[in-house]
Length: 346
Length: 289
Image 1: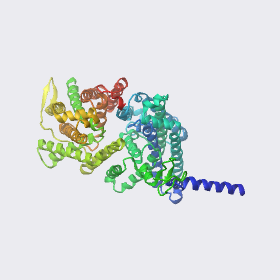
Image 2: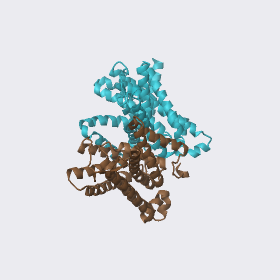
Image 3: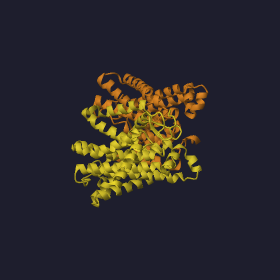
Image 4: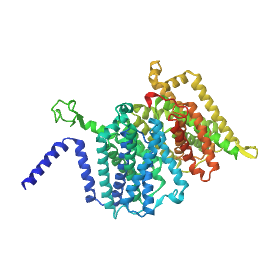
């Protein structure tokens, strides 16, 4: 009992000292707990379905942020990765009869390949040129999908895929768990040395190159990583909806992911995830007035941006937390002294 | 067949040119990627439809109303939604996407999703070597050329044009030389959206209207602008006809061409960009790379 009590006490101390001191960490813990315990309170099929789709799109939005937010390589055609992931997963599942746990990673690998293929011509382009060029890749692919209906199912898409798992409840835990896991991985990547280099490429590529870093390799890496995560979300989507259609490659798909990411605040990973968890259920709520649904969505985005052009989550975080001027540690906004170095805040 | 391709290519190319030049102007001056550009073109087409079919106005007056209303709408949305967040590039981007979506939804609410048509200004056709060329097509092409010529005169011969061109070239220096940068941006936005409205006016009798008609021209317009080089009017002009003819050739010559036309046009753009990353006529600015 003694050793067990000791560790329990230590855990509690760490929890109190590291988690409870910052509102953002408390929110993250509450969010994870809410995700875990949601099915305890309700097993409403419709609600679970929304949560599954929200989790899938959260991975997708975070993967856009990993590429476009961090390295600044504005990708207007992110639906390409999603669509390639979805279609490959569907083809592998339908023709080779591989179960989801094998077909989704294959779809993700195909998306990595797509990232390499579009990454290479895009390496020479910058800024708006890059943005407008990437926009064209999914549209080219849609043209090909329509012109080979035997293989791709044309406008109807490929349907009749295996279910993700036996029940809606296990679907929910798989996607929510994957969402938390993959987003943590993405966040860890951006916190690592690689992430620092991604940051630096966005800020000043010439300077990074002058520091002896092969920026080409890192930009390609960003394309591949982002493609990998977006491909997983595409594969999950295909298996959950049991269909992979041209809508996964649609321009509106690319635009929606940009809206989510920028609305939540780019260069954060958690921003886009939070934005999806706010905006996607909000869209479902707007189903109450089906004709006004998209209009309300557009209005919410427009007016939020007007007051918080850096995105919702960074704005909230700035309100709730201040950075210590001396040791650069985050503190809750109500504190007068820094919690680490006791320097005066503000 | 050849004449068909020629006529369709010229008209498609002119439409792209009108749209692309407007888009390229506001990008050059204010660095705004205006995704809503083609949405304004769509709104203009709908206003014309409404004025002619519902109010019974003469097409000429309808066109005038359309251009004025669209220009005002453009200026208002610029003032309220884009100007306050100009410094945040990403925010401007999604603000314009949201604007386009809002316009699409408003039109969907008012006119429903039906496909609508507007009668031609003049009926009848000309027979050249046994091929029908409708007067409306000739009129559209002629008006497009006329508008392009007027725009050229505005940009090259007037003080406003000089201000626009110099702001596009270097915003800070233009500001130092005493040009009110935000006013120039406002004027350019007006001209740019007005051009989108005019495009709607010339093209509306030849197309079917639907609230989703802004998507396809948007892609092609961006392809034209990138192909010709961002901010280059000449580039947009040449690029528009290259892609216009490419699209028409694919539609006429290849089976399943209607599906593949965008793919082929965009592939051409990507091929050009691999060889010349700054587009056909683009200028390479060291600081902007």
